[in-house]
Length: 453
Ligand SMILES: [Zn+2]
Image (cartoon, rainbow, N blue to C red):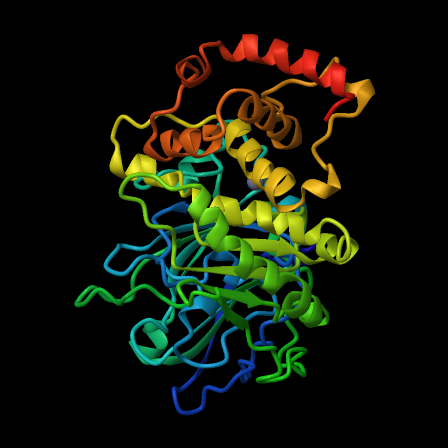
């Protein structure tokens, strides 16, 4: 083989093996920005992609209370104007940003990551560093703390994104596509976005991130948007009869649940929220005046974070005429509990036991909201193995037993202690004269007598 041929072959190998990260930045000026996010090069935010079913959470920093939370970033829910805080995710005003982790739940091939944002001013540009990880490296830290270089704890640095290098601080819509010339970014389970403010001359420099899409194919450019502009159902806003509380039910991502949400769910929520607030008072406490129920794709039943309830469409559909409404009454108890207050107001706050937090919510559901369903009865063949601290239904049954036998105010009192961060097991002795273990023995004997009621 002559030298020239060898050289050519070597070059060919080098060329095919070379892979390089590409960052594509698309921009629509404030005047041109329209619902649907139509860009010159990048596809519009899509309804289904690898992030649709991912878990997205804040690793460092704090989401702004006006923002839609990290689930606003998930598929098919982009804002339809330039100032829709609750359809975006952004870090707290005045803060120095933070990081967001996307957990795809398993290691999978990723071809492209697209991020979208929209605002009329300095909250439009995107400034972040992107990392990825399989999560299997020794010393991997899924949630690297502020100041820790993710690359030192099992993350691979992918690229830096700064749309200001191309468009300065202009408002409008941005679409950023991160891909690799090889066609594949790699196989990963986790992505980490370490986000910085776009400016610090005022407190409004944290980007309004509208969506993160993770693609298993290279983005082939603009496609007919599968979310027709302006076609999303507007959230349904209702007030309690006394006008004091406002509840927003957002079913933009589950339009076929509109009737159920308006007819079956909303009347129960407005009736029961004030009742739960009245049941669970404590000194100096004011229950949230507003909260939101997001009906959205995802796994599981429902969950609550502060004043936002997520209800997951597949389960809700399955239980539309079954357990769905009761499950949301349970979540509404979490909105009223606000046990996060304890740590904000009391530096010595004790951690509340999860079994009791969930048991209390289920107590309200099964014994006050729907006692006729007997949902927390213990099956006779389960009485022997039932434990008072099994959370949810068994704990609800236990709370009901102790309430009936010893103290009608037991639940409000234990709630007040937990909200102040002052609960421990001495509560039971103080209120009933018996330890929780002794009460449990009595409870089990009672279950045997009544057949689990
Ligand atoms: Zn719960």
